[in-house]
Amino acid sequence: MRARPLPPPTDDAAPAAPALLPPVAGAAAPVGRARHSRSQSWIGVARPLPPRRRLALTLLSFLLPLGLWAAISYIPILWHPLVEVTNPGEVAWMEPGMRVPKAAFAEEVAAASSAGTEAPAGRPANPVYLPAPHEVAVALWTTLTAAPPQRDAIWLPASLWHSIQIIFWGFTISSIFGVPLGVLCGAQPTIARLTEPVIEFVRYLPAPAFGALMVAILGIYDGPKIAIIVIGTFFQQVLVIANTTRRVDPLLIEAALTMGSRNLRLIRRVVVPAVLPQLYRDQRILLGWAWTYLIVAELIGTTSGITFFITQQARYQHFDNVYAAILVIGFIGIATDIALALLGRRLFPYARSEA
Image 1 (cartoon, helix red, strand yellow):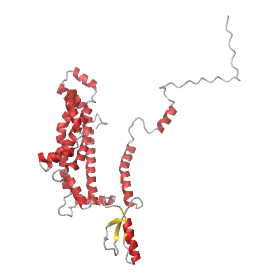
Image 2 (spheres, helix red, strand yellow; image 1 turned 30 degrees about the horizontal axis):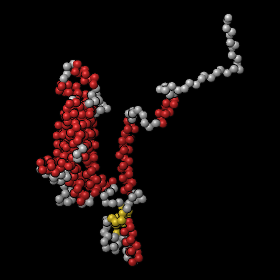
Image 3 (cartoon, helix red, strand yellow; image 1 turned 90 degrees about the horizontal axis):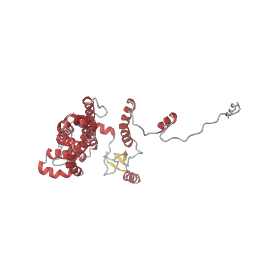
Image 4 (spheres, one colour; image 1 turned 180 degrees about the horizontal axis):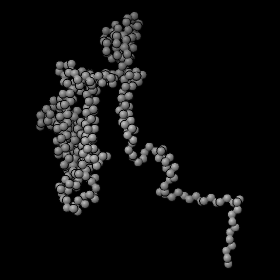
């Protein structure tokens, strides 16, 4: 029996709408919706920033704290808890330049007004330990170019050069022993299990706790200072470099073993070249830790270097010089890091992201 054909659709009949299927898990979202959701999200796949935006954000990272510092220093309504005396009037215990609390200053003004004597005059001021940015800038230029006015004071460039030598020798000695041991720990599990547990224990011991012992062994001069920097960076260095060495591609190791590389030859020809860019970057970071231990190290034995300059200027309440010395340390640190980064790009052009 032949099937009866269906009648052709008329113009009045609208085509049936397709059935809506439930979304399939893992299916891609429509392009418009994906773009919209991606534009609304701050977190996503990390992509390099455009050069102009990267430069602008870099400048902004410095300008924000500088702007906050300037606002606190120059805008009295933010935080000026003291009054700097410009004219003591007839108040015997006040002197020009003295900073007194606002309440005490107001009491003296009220007392002078009621007694009919000359009242003191002053202007809002912050504590002496928070100088304004322009005062620190002037102090920075003065300490770098002029001899100190005090007879027993030291010159900032001389003290800074002494501290740089302490950093150099401490970090060099630490690297001579820490880098090879870290590579061996990362490449050989037996050596790692034999050394890393005790290194993990010792790295939690504060390096300054060894100060008295180092003075007893090495004397009171530069020996214990260098030793403190070595202790503070060596154990961290071994663990960081060991973890970096373990990131070598196992397929690369297997290929080298297949081709006959063994033991120290394998480390020298395969492992070290594979991790060298990242190892170089680790050393840049660890160098900053050495500067962190410097201030504590220079307080051990005879006070010397940049620490002696900072403590002496704080004793005289020249806090603008204190801030200047601290900024000099920061400038030297960031300049050293930038120089090492540029050198790393020349040494490892095949690993620009790691240098």
